[in-house]
Image (cartoon, rainbow, N blue to C red; front, side, top):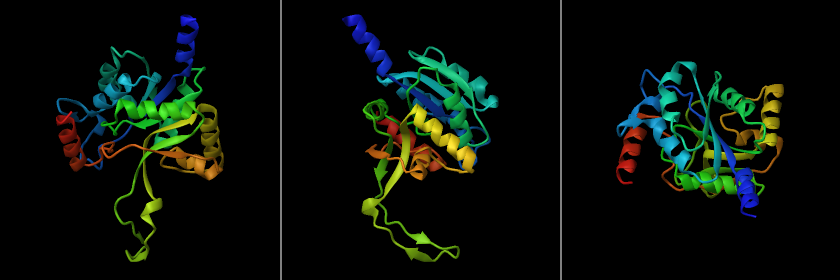
Length: 236
């Protein structure tokens, strides 16, 4: 009975794709921002540490550009989980699509995570995994606290949407593999360009739930974000 239980638990674990093919343009850096120093380690190392610690993740695919492989490869060594390197595309959308192709044949559920969200807690990976295993497509998100304004091309305010219904989308995002592959196939067929995978489900009319990620799951994009990340990590 113990052997059967262990087998079931292994099959219940999810697969994770980490998008790590970013640039340092908005950071003002001349290299992939995920390789910048953050408290003595590459930024991506912090993301991977959380992924390695998550209980419900079985396999990790890191999607990056060929030029970064030499620096990223050492970060993948010694992982307690199966880890694969996947060559990314020219856009995030294309990179995720390549990641889906590279998943192991038995993958049924997948998390997509931006490597730049280096403060992600292992528990957030596990909560997203539990939700997708229960049958939901979900995204980590946080309620919007600022008042949001729509503006026109001249910079004039045209509308103030009710922030009570607004959430800021984050990652991880969790989906059934077959459904996400179908979403990407439709995007390629119809010429859709999206900035996150949940948008594919929205366009197809498929439900996606939000899961409150809390305030710390920021994406490091600018030098200020890097300073914030350093401060948060110093308190852990």
